[in-house]
Structure formats: C-alpha cells, structure tokens
Image (cartoon, rainbow, N blue to C red):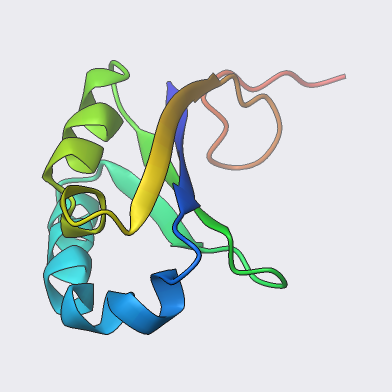
Length: 99
C-alpha cells in the first residue's frame, strides 16, 4: 500500500532547516534504500509543507519516520499526517486497474 506523509512546516522552516538537513536527508535515504520511501520533497510557492510517498505494509512505517525525523523533533514540522493512498494507475500502482 502507498502512504503519504504530509508535513506542515513552521514559518521559519527555510531559515532553520540547514542545521538539521544532513541528518534529515540521511534518515530519508536510509528509508529509501530499504524500499520504504519512494519520493519525498518540499512543496514550493509557498514553501509551507512537504510530501513523502511511502510503499509499506502499514501506516506505522511513515509514522515511525516522522517520529524520528529531526525536522519534527526540533519543531520545523508543526504538524504531520499519514494518509493511505490507494494508487490504481501507473507502473508502480499498488492495485492497478485497467479499462
């Protein structure tokens, strides 16, 4: 199943993220190497959030990522949410549906 980890970031996120970015990216790449994190990145215009796409057996995987993320632990992320995403179209769709 696919899950979206949605971040709402603090107003000063861009100014403060430099001090935590290397640790955050290391955590993200480790998750990607395990096959969990598929894509992730910040939203732009405005830079008020981020979206991370996970391929996992349960929402516990992206939730554990958020709970360990230095952006969350240090208040750069004000709120995070995990949402299931029932993907049906595309080469990586979890449950492909064809016409």
